[in-house]
Structure formats: structure tokens, C-alpha cells
Length: 160
Image 1: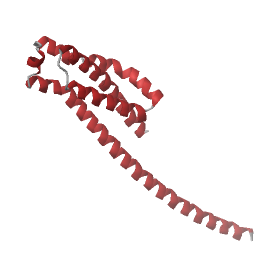
Image 2: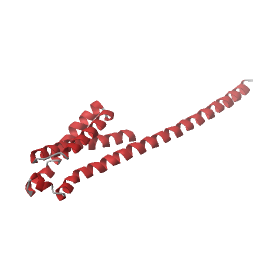
Image 3: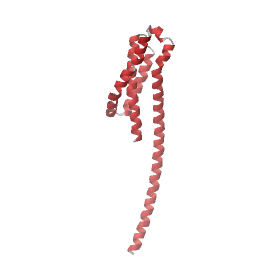
Image 4: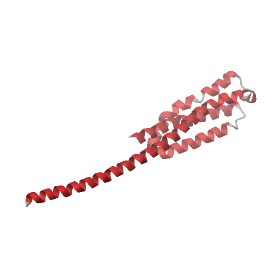
């Protein structure tokens, strides 16, 4: 009798395990779909940010071709300073923004940086003096320098 009850228990246990495995597989498939969908949204958004960032850094060359030097009455040396000044805060902002990102979180920092980046880029179109060109390029470097590690930090969090 004990042997029969053990086999019945094993049969019942096997049935429960198989239904639990089916539920686990169902949840695993749902999780895979959700992760795939979030990866697609996050990676495509970050790709657009990266493209716009490179486009934004190169737009001063396009403005030069459209006559920026003549409008601001600057020479080639001043123009090269305006190009170079972007990368000083770009490099300097990476570590502090990364530390702040860990405290505040990517869900706050990335939208904040993108908004600031958009504002700086927009106001760069209203520059009428060399000093304001330098200021806008400096601020642009500070915001973009923080955005790059923040987006990569977010991608790494999604992977692990």
C-alpha cells in the first residue's frame, strides 16, 4: 500500500511539476518579448541621440560654410577656438555626471540632459557675438559630455 501511494504521489508531483514548467516557459517567453521590446525602444532612442550628437558637433562647420565667420566677424583662429572649446567640458563632464547619475538615476538624468541639450542647441541659433558662440559651444560640450556616459550606463543596466 505504501508503494502504491508513493507512485501515486510521484505521478501527482510529476503532473504539478509539468504544469509549473509550462507556466514557467510561458512567463519566460513573455519576459523575452518584453525585454526584446524594451531593448528595441531603448537602443533605437539611444542611436538617434548618438546620431544627433554627432550631427550637432558638426553643424558649426555647416554654419561656417553658410557665412558664420562673416556674420560674427571672426578669423580662422577664433573659429578653431570655438570648435575646440566644446571638447574641454565634454571630457571634464563625463566623470561628475556619471557619479550624479548613480545618485539621481538614469530615468531623471537622461531626460534632463536631453532637454538641456535641446535648449542649448536651439539658443545656439540665436548667437550674434563671438562671446556667446564660445559660451554656447562650452555649454553644449558640458551637456553632451554628460549625455554620452549616461546613455551607455543605461544600456549596461539593461544588459545585466
